[in-house]
Amino acid sequence: MFTILKLIKPFFLPPTLVLLGMGLALFLLFRKRWRWGKIILGAILVIYYLLSTGPVNYLLIRSLETATPGFLGTDSGGGEPEAIVILAGGAWRSGPLRPRDELAGPSWRRLWRGIELYQEMEGQIPILYSGGSGNIFDGVSIEAKLSRRYALTAGIPESDFLIETTSRNTYENIRETKKILDREFPNSNPHRVILVTSSIHMPRAVLIAQKAGIIPIPEPGDFLLRSSGFNLLDFFPSAETFLDSTRCLNEWLGIIAYRIMGRL
Image (cartoon, rainbow, N blue to C red; front, side):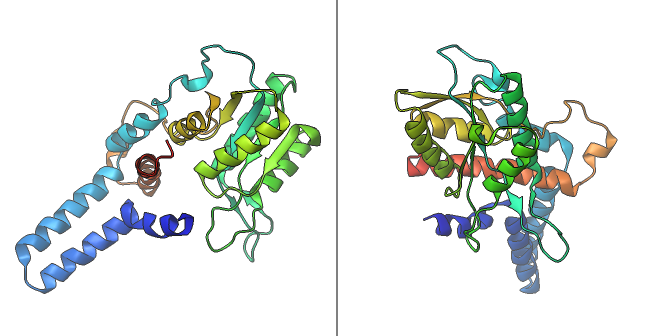
């Protein structure tokens, strides 16, 4: 199921949909079906423009970054957390043009926020970094071990930095995290954790954690929303804005898919 979902997901996201739409429009124009070819081509251009500019991108990001109850670390009470759980966000292997393995940008920011929380809490609870390989063509995980190496360099004791390396997606992140929490804190039920991930990823992660019987305290470590105001440049298409819009739609697609599969 994991592999199937990974293979079909691109067909529901803007980069592939835009390409397929343009291909269909060109096919219709080639067949001299001018009216439908122009309609589809025009619709694709409008969709691409909207996803690549500020206002729609702002609404997409805001729909996720403000969707989580208890957002920005506010807590409704109920006891002390047992651990700081950081969800993986990707890593890059070394290669001819990359001299060393590196964490992807979201992973860096999530890890750093987790380290900050550990230091703010004076090391009272451990960090648990959850994440194996989400690559269907490379099942060997480097991210969690790489994160632990960085954390040790930052002064975190090895005994306080637990890792989980078998999960491949958010659902498995939480499932495997629950197993470790059951082992490390057998007398606690339900488990209560500080959950660190990207802000747009937080709604899905919180829903899965709650479904698994974990009480999450949301603590985003990576934000996309930059400003509520717009300037002239925000109305010009931007590759970065298109990417951010795609990331948001990917999260909504994940929420819908997990709802259908009964994982939320």
